Length: 237
Image (cartoon, rainbow, N blue to C red; front, top):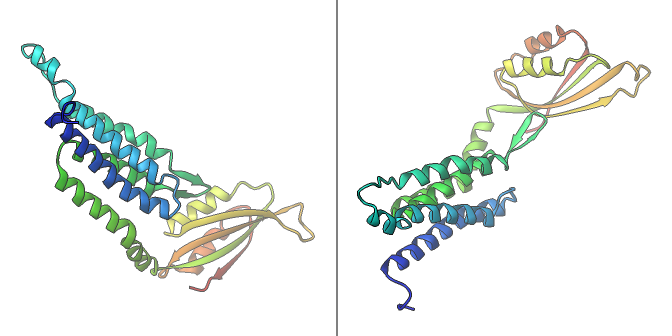
């Protein structure tokens, strides 16, 4: 095997394997939590980014040596294209469902494994390993921190009855967001009562800050033309 592999080849192999291993660790966490981009996606992104970095460092040496008088080469240019280009892949993991957005953390993890791959490809093993540890700690353990901050809000359900043909949903959402109310889910249905041909009901699941003056919010919503009735139900925590 030594007949075909020189010292440079061993360096390339070690860097690519290191990038794939570190990126795969982050991918395992995403796979475990059943996110759109899992183990294979993260491994491929990290390995590919490493290959680009390795190619930038070792792929053009013979050409530069043959044309050293006219060539001015910056290996970081290829790395910059990886950093910007991987954003398109990350955007594909972001899912917008009504007013909720999912996949932002997975998109960020794809971006960071590309950076880890570039670091490994450049031989910065300490930076790549340390970043991987930080990312894994944030993904596995910082959910508890998120839950701690979420205790400052209370889950609620709002039932808003409107005239059937009134276009008021955007105004309702704007009013809620102006009062720091986080909208989690919106569902619409037709009123089954006597006036079912004239009424429409929005079931809105929200998280409202504890300091919110609900009476003031109630009054602001009633000022929206087209709203007939509002019910606010406090959910159990």
